[in-house]
Image: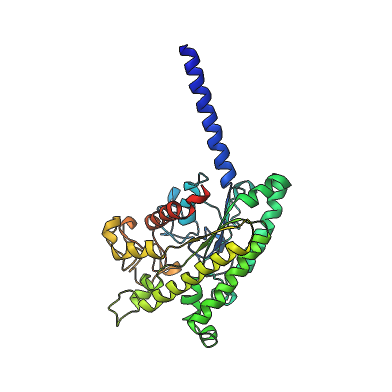
Length: 352
């Protein structure tokens, strides 16, 4: 009788393990990423641009302590999300020659630091425009079908989670930096222009087989250390007009999502909005275990990023975990983990 009881337990355990594996495998077999420096794992290392971070002190807290091209001291949000969804702990860059299709089959990023929805934004720093990221994805589909076979590749494409994260550069590196767009559009008009591009991009992804898509919102732009540094009149506090633009743009993206969910049969489109989680961290850093949120860890923390954030700067902090921001534009690994955990629990849980 005892042996029968043990056999039953073992059988039940095996069933549950198989069920769990089946569910996990069917839900999200891969994460496919498009966007800017918030989700670029090193694609810009392979193109002629100054928008790079493949040098120290970037990556000093990454596995092995090496710079990868991620604009962080360690991992970035999509890395943590991949791990949380039961996949690998890091998502490789498509242009990184150290990886191949067997690596990309469970997750890949086509993102390029400095890019945006607007082609004019990617031209500022000569980075990969969104349309080109999509061309790389089409090439990826061909390689995936050759590697997995038509049927399995089609399942991967349909069941994968597609994540986008961009928009900040369109405003800060383009609209507010150069007169071309600002002379043609009001800021609200430019928001509408970008939302139109976002909608077309989602529809094209859908046409290529994507069904589970997370559209990323933009952060409180006015609270990035770079913007606070220039806010002399406001005593280096957050630039509220930029935060207002972020809120307005995010609101329009939410409306787009609602429209597309009704318009495109079988799509599950969600909004991953980092605005309030990040703002809460910035306003109450001690509640999250941080000491500093107004300036960044690297160099003086006021304006440096990319090549200005270099290994020889004596001002760079020793413990990035005490800082909300790594450089003047990008969060630390610790902040990325907190934001990612929030998005997984509150938005992406429906894909688990």
